[in-house]
Length: 359
Image (tube, rainbow, N blue to C red):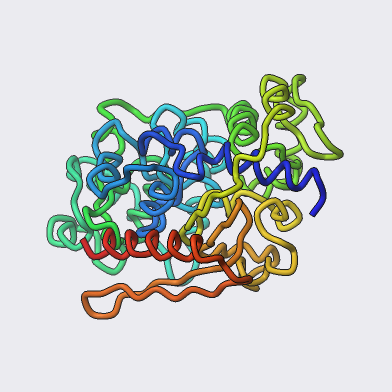
């Protein structure tokens, strides 16, 4: 591992609030540009960054004004800081009135009749003013039951509806509510290119130094748009060939020490950190020989980040969990041996996770 990669490892571990450096769920969501909303990954991403995590603390994110579950980077659903959410969504999604959404939901398997959609979406906006599960909505609406899921999904992409999470940290039961009703005002619409340039600054603060290709992969945008976002900033500093950081952070970057040493982190599947870089940029957190074990072999970019065990900021294993009856079983596959103290820490962290998921 080069000295530069080693510096990236320690700096990124610090900027991602790993080592349980976060103070509250919303601070963490804001600092790292959001977390995947999928349970239990979203809660466990917060837990990996917070010393006194509890299910009750996580549930505060699903209160009005606390965070928003919206499609964002690569069209995945994220928990987002409400102040930044309009900019993030505008940067990475087509505008609400784009024909792209009608096209997406004209495909076989999720087709919505074009003539019916305006009336169905209007009915849902007017009637779903409080969070309700989809199962409960079926008896209240004229939308056919086999189409309701797709209509709600499209409305979320179009910034008409919002997902609200279930109380259980392991449950992916979702409730839906009118986004405007939840906010108490219309959802702000930003200009896409200015929004992407602003998102780049936030990305580099949380994930940099990083390359243009890293940002492009993470955001899920075209090369042309990504490069334009970089050109929009005159104060980006190339701290190493192709690796960029905003000038206000450069002095801190140059002075930063080895903050990841002695740390053991247990990250969930699709953690924001492991999903933050293109394949070429992942050496800061996983040795190239182990990248396929951490990311799998699905897709051209092998981007299915699994649960990771970081030791001194470097992935030293993966872990999997599954429910068996009322219990959660955990399987660990290590890339190298841990010492006795590290094993104790890992076992304690996994016991915590089991307790949160069952509770």
